Image (cartoon, rainbow, N blue to C red; front, side):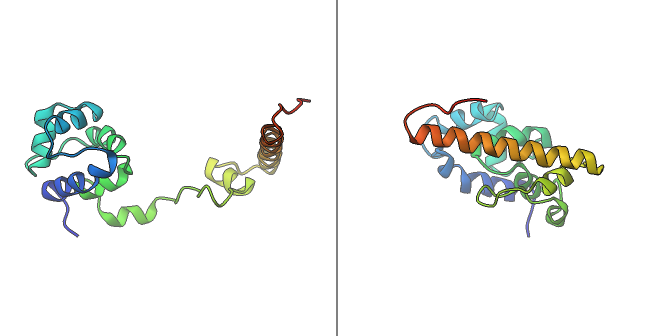
Length: 144
């Protein structure tokens, strides 16, 4: 996989339209630069494949494009694609996280603390269910 200035330029051009930026239209590069908290000259050099910004500058660009930061790091050649294999996948919203998986992500190893995480998550889910049922009925859920 190619990485570096040209790959980053192609990546930004590929995903800008989905984020609402028509980079060929007047003023759109300036608008993206403002959203990415960078100068228009910096963005122009990125789009021309002539400059790799510092990794910290890629974060606001990723946010402006609505793309994962790690993808920009790979496209720019800052980190190798193989490094992504070591990044844990975030939980998928359609697949509820378990209390034990949450405790693992937080590094909670003590069994009493893990039980606290389980109890807290169950209480949060109960509150969410109660709140949702109150909205469906047009009223507010009673607290207590």
